[in-house]
Image (cartoon, rainbow, N blue to C red; front, side, top):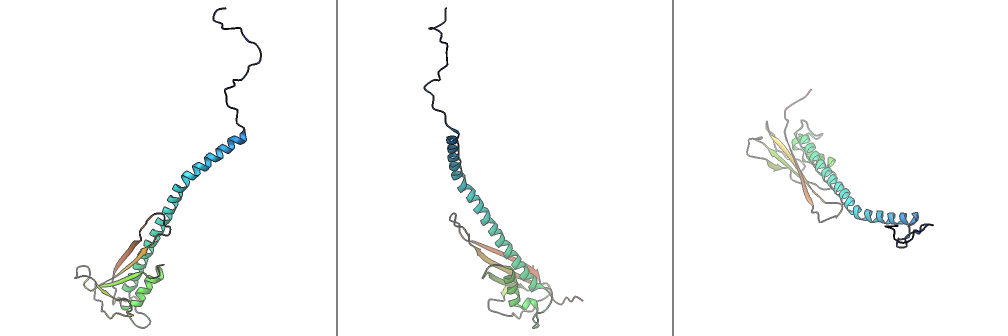
Length: 184
């Protein structure tokens, strides 16, 4: 017969001897666990960095929100109509204005600057009053006078992931002083 090389063998087929031995199911699981562990080790630092970054950004936003609320409440207190129980108008009550900041802010000692602008928006400019330690400032508010409260604090990152600097956070609120407005 043409095209045939050698005699034809009949009988059981022998597997080739150059193949690797088959792995068992337990060996395959061990290899997959090792692969999963390596993938986890590669991805975990990135995920941890993202999560900690979100936590720090959230803390920064809470800090800004707290300072913003504190300055707004203090300006609202100073501009409101009324007197303290000792007969001092709210715009002269330095302790009450500072107390409004401290009641809202979660910082131990925020920097509080209280300004008074007797001429309003078109005037010369605000003048600082109610310096630290003053209980009452005897200014007389005119019609259209503005009271401003600036609250500052420093944000310090909780987790030293990288060399993140401290961030100064400041919020300022200004309101028109309501005087001689009586509500029945």
